Length: 338
Ligand code: SAM
Ligand code: SF4
Image (tube, rainbow, N blue to C red; front, side, top):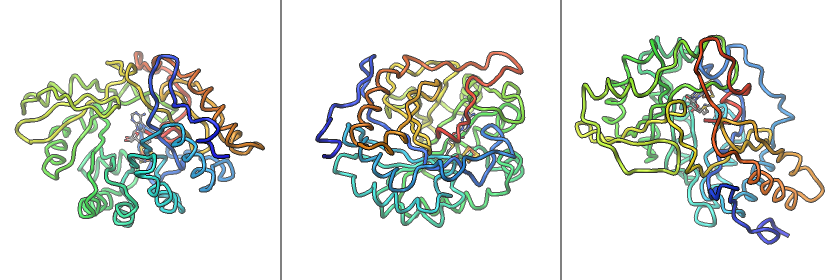
């Protein structure tokens, strides 16, 4: 029996939020080492613990059967996983058959190689993380000199007809002064842009408080240059948007620390080892790998998803309120994806 036949109930949590959006991390590995995300000597998961292509595919189908209509593939860096394209193609075949949208978040270092194939498999939009257009700053921040490849990747995505949204983490004293130029550049390229406050996930080598930059300060700086008008645009995600008259573009703000965005949450996250986190900012979790490897995977997966709906918290527990504070959560963003 298929998962759909045994339990087609939609995913609704105890706060009556309908969960329709899955962010699926396909690897915790990455070819960059962004300083706010992971240490230089990051310990990655043993490969045997990571879900196989077949398991990821089967699990995703189980989610779609329960009403997930949007899947974002993330990581780590999804494009460093060798069989990634196979998974994208397999899930792409579900678009229009339960799945409304398949997207990806990538650092774009390998995008020039994959953009055409991703577009052909049905990916229409991607998020690309880019914090600076300055090569030296990029090298320092990502600890790799990869800005040229990223820019090539962006060009290839554009040529392949994939809509791009740039995600930029705002960092005090690092890209702070450059943000208006970066937003202007993104809009000039026809890309949307979103700014993100740094979040306290996992130990890195420095104190995040040193670089924490509230987006209210960034907004003030942007308003010196442009007119920002509140926009009704919503993606079901945490971003709040403004339209910028002068650039003709849209800019999102994700402010987990100065603003709570949990009321309308429609999402859950699964790590590359099949651990479902009910909230990016909480520790509530369910082991889907055990379910997938049990005697009756369909029933076990459905039971695990029901359990996830029971434990999804009302709101996240982030705070960067004092210098030297321990991370709110010990896991890194590269585990659960952004
Ligand atoms: N490697 C891909 C990339 O960078 O786009 C996908 C995974 S990455 C973990 C997803 C997003 O998380 C990126 O936009 C990155 O900037 C963001 N991110 C990582 N660590 C973060 C942190 N501590 N606070 C805020 N955003 C973070
Ligand atoms: Fe890699 Fe993305 Fe983390 Fe940067 S933010 S280290 S690109 S996973």
